[in-house]
Length: 437
Image (tube, rainbow, N blue to C red):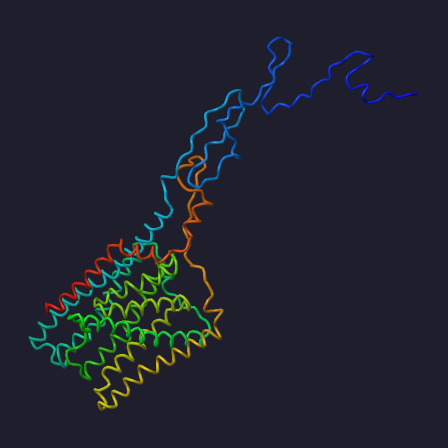
């Protein structure tokens, strides 16, 4: 039996031409065929072919514009597409700079409040003590100046703590984040202590250069607030203020509270800004340079150790050695005092060099370990129903978490009101010193 070829059935049946039936495409979901002639040929609904309607897969992914609402061809007509909306409602970089400036303002006003409290309390206390001293009520004290220095220590502590506690109370700042005393390798912390003391002494070099430059130009810098004539009786309250009260209070405020509050914007921003504010608070040009460098150094050490006692000890040792070096002539001969002064300057620097070698050889991996900030970084939120309101959450963090450049930090400083107030304070002290006001 002979079987016909497949081509014989392609278009013929019993010698007659038969039209090959066309394959019907399935209708989309929800679309039914329309039958207006009671069984006549049904027309298949077709999706709109308007070129203005784009599928969401074809939309350009431009972070500067929000995509139009997705259009679905569910009906026999093309719905109107919502035009793209620019991101004009929220700029992540502008918001980031605004929050950085707000943090600098808060930190600066803490120190300005400290200075104002110190000025007011010192004026009130000085007037009361002088009045009582003239009335003969303080005969058991050697002098009015000794009385002032004894109570100056408590006044400085109160002046620092009042605005700081107000800031902690009124803001969402956690006191636990300011009091960090992480345990760890004792030698690691000891190396940072030696390094900090020696580097603090080296920071006097640029301060002395600035002082020499000012003198070369015919001006002079303000002298440190020390007794007019240091005696053995005045040295004890003077050491109490410089070696115990000042390191405890200033490190708690400047490194514990201010640096921790600024660290949410990056460690570089926190270290440089807290150091600058710490330097401007001292009020003198040469002292500002020394204190700013030392403050940045203390901030770096605090971040590397996460132990506030380390910076407190560095601050106390530096003040102690500097005071003994300056006033050792009260207890020994002049030549011996000069030798002690030189030794107390050279020995810390040599110990800092040894400590630096140990840190780079033994603790290199630990010292350069980049720790993540403990504070939570803010995230942008996107609302799908309002595509023009905010950046999408996968776009904004790219700008928000980007490292802060030093130029941005400097720009933040000079757009902050407290920074300018402190600059005017330093300038006023300079003018007052040279005009003998």
